[in-house]
Length: 311
View 1: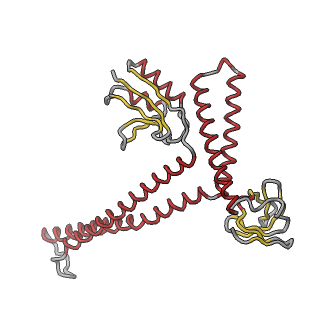
View 2: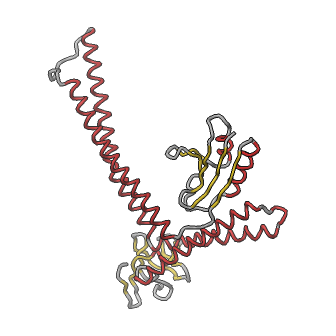
View 3: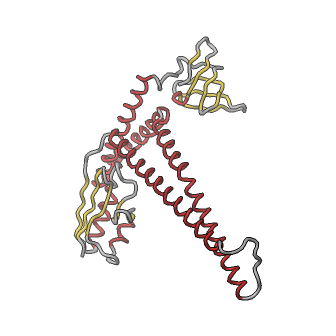
């Protein structure tokens, strides 16, 4: 029987270490509790668990079933939560590594496409241009050679096309990262995280209201999730505070946005139908209006004698 350790740390996520063997049943048990095989690490683990709260209930349940199967199992869970700026820096580094890998893949594909093109040309370079395919065995050999040359040329074209897509994938990754760092996106993320925190607190309260369903593992999981949410919210709020000081966020509110003003939202100029406390309602050209948070306003053309430059 195997000796297994299920551990969770913010840097590495949830991983399984041990002297397991193929066919000993540990993989089937772990998969039932959300674990997946990571080929690069050659370990089982929970996907997307880095800098996330540990899934304590699943970890403990998997450990219990493994013990019942005769294995020796320990569970270790780190209590600390990494600061938001450290998480962002680490994620940026991982994304840069992926972009570097895409760049290396582009170079490899380009070389492979060129090698395939040369191989295709070499197959038929000894044949005179326009030579017809004759009947008989020699004609069949001629036809097979032409088909192989065409197939190789097609593989070369497909490989070259895949190589040409690499720069757009790299640039798309950079745009997606920059988008998540925008103040308006950060503000929406804070609202979503705050809603998740309120929901989590209600679930934690329900454990006290219903002692018969109380689970120590579930409470530990909720407490870990709460720590992570509080750190992420605090970190994003700090980013927004810095953006306010720099004048790139919080410029618009009900105080300076009025009915019939023109606001630029998501690349389009819209007419304000109503300025609410937290949102602005804009006309759509139909019988209804759209609502957006003030953080999404990128520019304002005020008809009350105020005009704000683009942010």
